[in-house]
Image: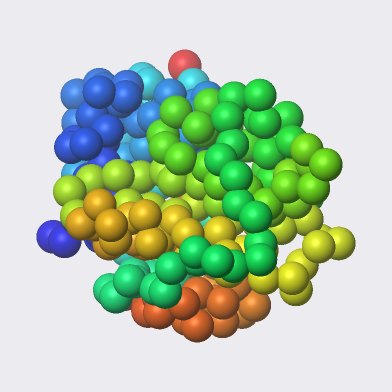
Length: 227
């Protein structure tokens, strides 16, 4: 199996293994960093192991729809394009859009932006622990952002890309994703990301930047309810 077929598991068993909550055949990130977890295969033993480290909902990537065992319920389910950028984009040096790095003090602003672009969902408050976060700001207000999340040999994920609705169409997301991609390629890795299949506007932006669909994936957020 290609590491991109099961990206969370690939990250939690390699370059981000020191962050993993581990139990038997399952692993997950601490919920305050990311809701994502995984296993090598959805066996009964793996589901049982995951239940013991997931009192809070956990999000799973899979190539096929998951069949949940008794005790689990679906909280959210979406279909995604997994996209990879094979060739480096042009550098953002000299562009007119100013890009700055985000730190822990910016989390409240990041959370507001995340909630505005993903209604009903919340930002993991320690997402910054997984890697760099970049933004476009105006008077200390975060107008747009992009973050790094999953990391395993050869690949780095760009995630949480978003722009406040009243500031879309100004090229902020394009500039941020380009800058992230330039840095990832400079480190000798390939950037990848996931995007909902119905988000045609974002898909068009990523395709213009040279991202190409590798595979369709499912993201299923589940919760264990039995004690």
